Length: 230
Length: 236
Image 1: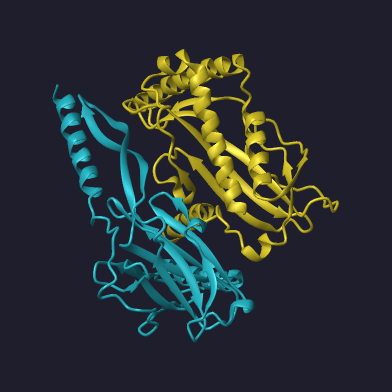
Image 2: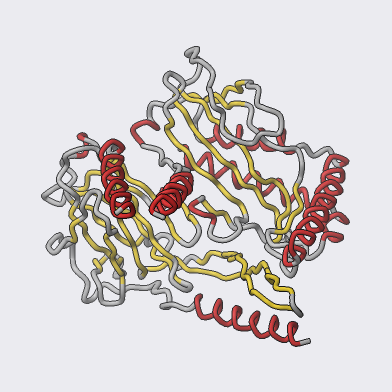
């Protein structure tokens, strides 16, 4: 009886915790032109570095950058400064679900004068768990691409998507003298909406770093082993 | 003592190394334009239609419980597979047809290439056929799961497909693209592309699932089509 009671209480705690985790900012699906920039502003572009340990993060929030569209609406945007080209690299871009909202990204690369060179539409992103993700490739052919403009894809903003979230939890219990693990699979159904707001992360990685990374790993391992043998 | 630490460190490093094996390799648009024809290798697709729970209630009761759980799931899988075969449903044939159509819609010239795979081994090939000039790349596919999977005892069975895909250049067998596409993934999909299971094909207990195999197989075909379409979308 006591064990059953514990299971029920802990299941309720787990359910409440799961419920809390799904809360987040409301989806912003309408932006109005007044107060927004007339065209992209490339000043204060956030720099992206190749092989940096930390991903570049940007939050699209109410009041952050937006640009007016001809029909009186607006889209959210931000500009990143791409690394100066030295060797081939890839750029992984993630947009993460926050509660019921998911920033709907589309990308454009620009040269130093703001001329559009390459476009990555929204449909090149794929959902991987709780994030939309795509990877861009940069080679010598793209050396003139100096900025990356990220904006909300207005054609999908406002669209809702269904989502199933499954998982499990384990509770260690003692029944009499025997310990055992109570395991339970869980599933909940939710929705998210493509929005003008959300959080994105960008990480650039060089394409031919295998040797360099191996050497770094070797040096780190040597240092660690040396420390352990001391 | 330092030796123990060293051994522990090496064990940990090897485990982490195994975890870090590349599962996902994005498809470079530059390589994409050079691939116009694809050799679709005989995929490793099981004709067993799995009926399983990710977390079976029996698993809470130690080794004996786990054995009972495994026996329960094996029995249900066998029963549902027989029902599916009775309806003329063969996973590998259905899946190939869906993929072939999706790739042709994507503008690829598709040619079936027969390869022999080890019996009951679901993994990428170790060696690929030598290039004969008829295709630009080989598509290597295998499935982990095709069937109805429930997260646990109190959740419904849903149609599920886990597809692993690798595209290799025919001439030098360089991996151009590698990915995993999951329909009704458990958890966050562990980096795989995740597709949400369609509504209307959930079964709250096994009896309901086997009572209407025709509809259940329809749900599975929808899952296969969605997975194949997503693969074709990735290759476009």
